[in-house]
Amino acid sequence: MPTVLIVEDDIVFRKQLLEVFDHGNGFDAFAEAGNGVEALDKTKCLSPNLAILDLSLPDVSGIQLAQELMEITPGLRVFMLTGSGTHGNHAWIASLHADSGLQHEDGKERAFLRNYCRLFQTR
Image (tube, rainbow, N blue to C red; front, side, top):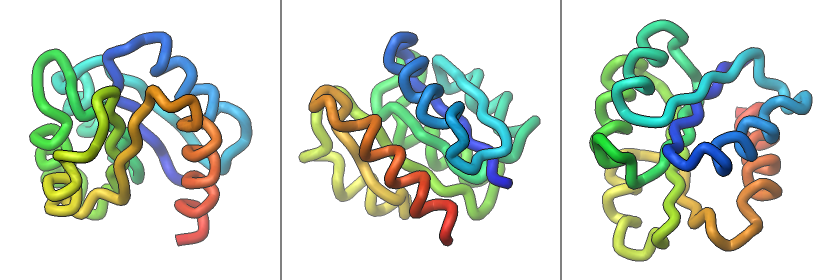
């Protein structure tokens, strides 16, 4: 079963995301990180199949972190989150071959991620 890494500096939102993966969504394990350094360390240990990244982290941009994580774990699927909208970031997200982007202030992110997880399981 796949492993997911959630990288989000907002601890409340990170806990909400963890709940999505903690309720039998077909993931073997999950890990969390609040910044890029933690994410890199956990990726080296876990080799996750899916990384859900905040676009704006305190120590690194989500774009840069995604590139580094994909170098460590070829084939890693990346899903980008942002609290400031994805409008100006679509080209960067697409250039990373990230699966998608989602603004996490619209209140629909948990349902969206549940559906995304189901799709991820079928790939």
